[in-house]
Image (cartoon, rainbow, N blue to C red; front, side):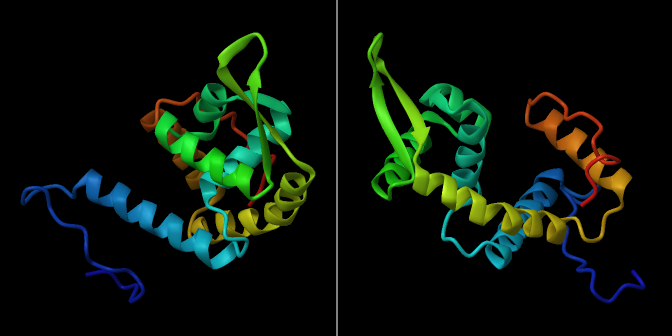
Length: 162
């Protein structure tokens, strides 16, 4: 048994052998959601924040590209973008050259929300990585990127301390 009383012995053996990766990923997701809810008080989700971040970089983005960059599927994107549009954070227009394509931009209210959320999101990331050193963080980013089928992040742990 661990000497650390804060650790929880709760990872089931799958099926009676090594610890289940699926269980650990699910628990990490739960912890991520908890950290977000503790640090971010705007009522926006991590996906909504990601949308604002992508639009701050891209300025104008079609829904498909936005979904690829922010990490959501078409059905989720339609709902989330519509909700953010109705709350005044985004503008959605039909592309004049392709009427099936929707172009999304951030409003001034969206920019103000993003500015408010940046430090809160950084706090959530600090909270989730509190027990990790810089190498752990770099390894975690690399492995999660690989697991998620994403381009691996550049080794910015030394340049971007938590």
